[in-house]
Length: 315
Image 1: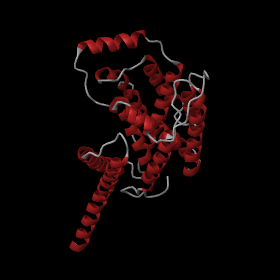
Image 2: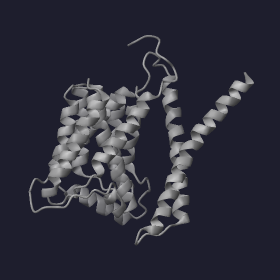
Image 3: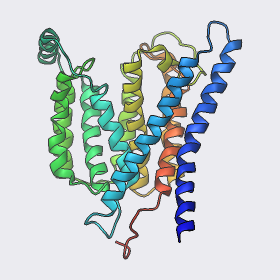
Image 4: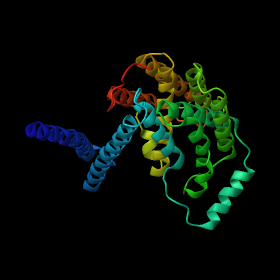
């Protein structure tokens, strides 16, 4: 028995160290390759930062698994929480509140309130916010969390953005959150959620619908993120991870296979990027389809995790 416990402990330690080793090796390889790239420099500090980021990611993964396991061991014994839904909810929460650093000057608050009160709601932002909050309601229900009650409270996250540096709440976001919450209360489930959500992504990606000129397509994945300020880049990464992952989840949750759901979302994103070559204010690149594939892989791995408590019988 003692030998079995030692074996389990060693196996768990190896499962924690393996992703850190992979991340460190990949980062070291990239840093060494930059010795041969003009304009780039190999940095030991970058390697250390990337290694610490990998360790932080493993720690967050452990925290996520601990939270999901506690839900498994709760009062809902006949059906465990949807780990895919839990992961997407965390991405959504991060996209709303990142970088989680408070505003320290009263002048910034005044400027934020003035902009909030004087800016007219944008139709595209309103529709996307409404679809987002409706989808969050479905994710909460799948995660075995009281959806209706918590969704009402989640509207408070919009005014909380007044307190977060670099974030600006908008009237469109607030009204969209209220509309999405009301819609979920009226119709908590619908098989049209997936098609409607992906349609709004298409609508969002092609706005403002004024063709002008031609933009070259970029085949460098995540090139746009690397050119942004890090706060903006990480926030957009969380936002897109939630949107694309939720689109895949909605199709899967309402009857389609996981592979078909992933193909549908990736195909729509490829179409959006192609059409953006003729639209102003957009940067057509390969990043979004690649990101959707990575998200699909991550969701697939979450779905493969067995719950801590097996259901007594099928629901």
